[in-house]
View 1 (spheres, rainbow, N blue to C red):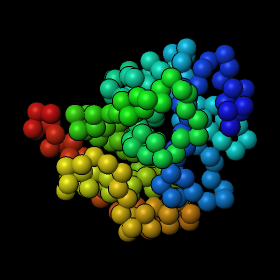
View 2 (view 1 turned 90 degrees about the vertical axis):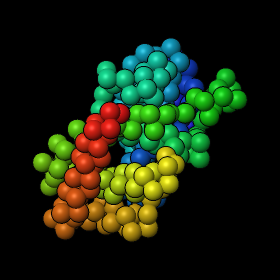
View 3 (view 1 turned 60 degrees about the vertical axis):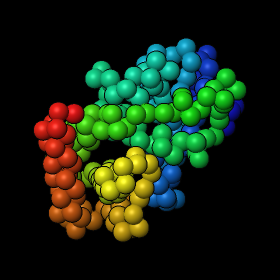
Length: 205
């Protein structure tokens, strides 16, 4: 992998590469692309670099730091998935020596402080996709997001959590694209996100 990373991202220095996407949530199959997050030193923007079977979500270190703070200038397309940092340590494929000792700090995001910001991006992203739902496979992530957020609300811990029921529903939708079957439930989850955002606003967060 290191050789491939060097070839794809030269002359920039790869600080960290970790698996992301459906595979880290136990939802991948033989047809799934392999997804990776890559953080580069010496690069200042964001990009998706594609190979035959993989997508590399690529951030320069300054951009990654902005993502961690939910900077308004960052693209919703990237901020929606920022919770994959919760599983990054278990899915590392390459790490540079310079950040090994400070990896926890490097990946740390104050999700509790930025909960409203994340909700805003989720609503913006999935709202459009619900309007054009017929071919929108990414909607299965709503099941995952609901599990994580309900777990946070019940425990006060913002950590990875995916209920067995929701995981089975997500896998069914991703595999079969039986959107009409799932649409009422997906709309229910979206309404839940909207209600939480309204609650955050009313509480002055």
